[in-house]
Image 1 (cartoon, rainbow, N blue to C red):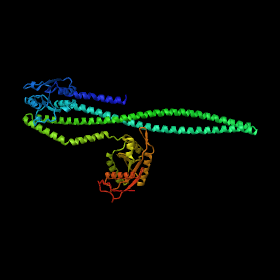
Image 2 (image 1 turned 180 degrees about the vertical axis):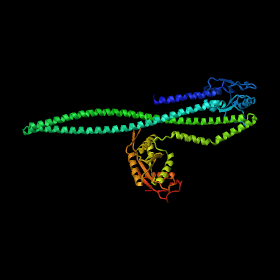
Image 3 (image 1 turned 120 degrees about the horizontal axis):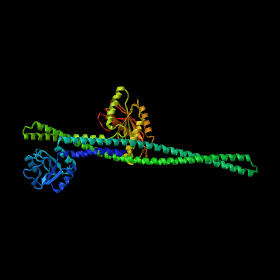
Image 4 (image 1 turned 45 degrees about the vertical axis):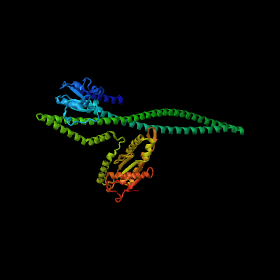
Length: 558
């Protein structure tokens, strides 16, 4: 079974939940009565009603045909517009409630200048939906609010089940993305090794064949000279000529062997060329997979937004359920009291709920944004993000003070970052960051900790005992990380790194001040050229006060 089939099965397993969600609120609903709606509004509303309740009977009547007092069978639902051709929809609902009609109703707002009456909350069994938002979901929500608590709880459980199914699908996609990245990196390394071996072998055999040809030509020339010499001198030396002929035959045999070996080598080269073509095809497949992964990331972002929206709707439903439960409890306690006093109490509580919801709306939106950032921002390069930098630095400072050992940090930056992004694009720059982090992890020693602070910047907390030791460590990082170019989308991109070394002292106010000083040292190092290493020496007199972000001379760089 392919991974794509697996994802489709996951979503197909979650699909029945949506059908259950649509049908569960219609328990007990027998007919929907559309009062005073124009044909265009009727056609617009019928799509959503039939999508949620396909078997329910739908009737269209005029307000003048209702009679006085009107009567409706159990299980009926009224749908009334705010403006009728012969009156006002709110007045009609007020008249129906005056006649002690307990049938639930939905008021459809068709105009933007609708003004809510002061006694609107006393009509009871009523939900309001703007025409622009009247959809399958809003109609289903109205049925839930006007229905039973059992239907509401069932809807909440099914919504939670569908959210869990989406989370499983997203986790499987993340796992597949990691596997594809590993396969792509392994194929790149293997392709580079095969190309280097092929070039070295071909050059070696070409040199050996050239030497054999030169030696054979020399022997032929010597044999020719030996044959012409006796004619000029009149003396024939048969033994010497025989020896040269044997030597020439021997070298001809050796050359034939070399030709056979060269032929086998060419066959091997052809096979390697075929393997290279296969690997190039695999590389194209990997590039296609990477493009599909990027598209999957965009789809995942949209799904995350949908999940967040569903979670907000779920929270609203829970709040509505809690409000309804509180109202039911209050109604049971005050069943023998005056209905007018009960309505006043309910109106006050609804006003309090709306006021509290308005006050906490900003907090809810901020928490939703934080949740979205936490779900989307993944640590692709296995390096801790800048949100963990301050905590890790504080832990390292406490450890340094406890053990009495120095704390030295290395701020590592990519030289020419802006030019690199302009020439190769931001996607290629992200792949380079991933490979830099992987190579940094391979060069770390016990006690070192690397964190990604910003775009093209890494902060390394090292266990070096002195600044000289830290400089040696920085030179080794520059040499090992940048020794080989970075393969990205069929290109070999070479970069260089600059390093600023800073030792923590008690005069530094904390993690933000240490990061600021290290970044400034890195900027001054990169201003002098590429592959720079600078040690920042701090003086208590020159240090700025805690929390200051002034860019004018806070330290000296040596």
